Length: 422
Image (cartoon, rainbow, N blue to C red; front, side, top):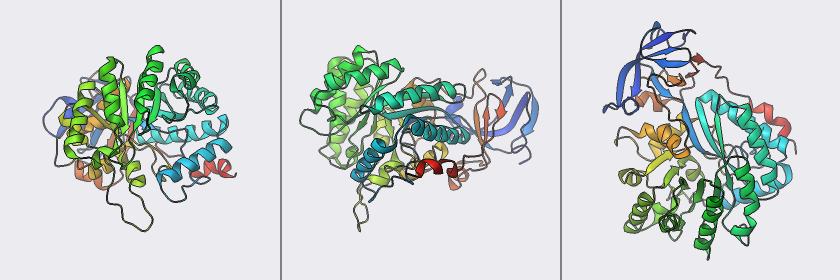
């Protein structure tokens, strides 16, 4: 591969590259093409020609569901049994004991450096927002957003449980004001509680009064009776809500009666909800019992969603914390594992959108494209087709930002050692 490791500065033309057809309006799964770059942008033609020997090229990725404030606490706060409740308890204890502004900032910075090196340009992170953490973490997010401007566009979404307060309408209002002050998205975790519909309606009232979008963690359980996704869709339709709504996880759909699950998806499609699937974290937590092999893996119904025109995406979720002990905010890893887990292969040829275009659309980031006039923000892999891409981690990838190859050296975990000495 003559040019793969030798990409000079200045106007260049990447010859003989492989791109997903769906990203350039072609019907074929993969297409051989050329890409010209000048002055930090993709241009029509010109530049020093470099034979890329069929290397695969993607626009930089959008990771629309992460938890930068939780990331990398595993060495000091590991999950004792790998269960969902083990994660909730352990994170709560660590948050109370250790989540100062400096601690959150250091771990966020480490995570953003990793994501940037892997080729991600847009991130939405959830922020644990139970008071008093809301007044600690949101200013940190604002600081990181300013610091990383031009490299990673960063959004925040608040995170509280739907039963965290006696009254969502009253007790969540001060936090909603903080979210609005920092240009965030209002979020909530929903699960079956007796008055969940009332709480969801109050949530939308809070968001609507402040002009905020909504982002929910939904039915992250294998309990088939968990149907808050259906309730959210019904409330959106009933109220005529017209701002973007994102729902993540939706695991219980996979445990429900087929007809019931599909009728819920019909409502989700009608309501125009965006769905983000988090299969890596879901496989780690769902149906975990000591000494028993898991039967149900919690992967939501992405094929059925896509068939209904629902905007479906995949994202990283947690990184080296009690909810997921692994991960590195690497969207190629997410794409590789999601393809295997959700059987995206032997399916439609345009699933690349679920890691690039779809999440950008859901979060209103600038849509990634390989068209002339777009920023030359690219991820180049030595793999020449899908099997080569997914067979290896692509650790030799090249990341180009504004037309220049960046240093893709990942930060060393030892940099966080001082934070783990508690």
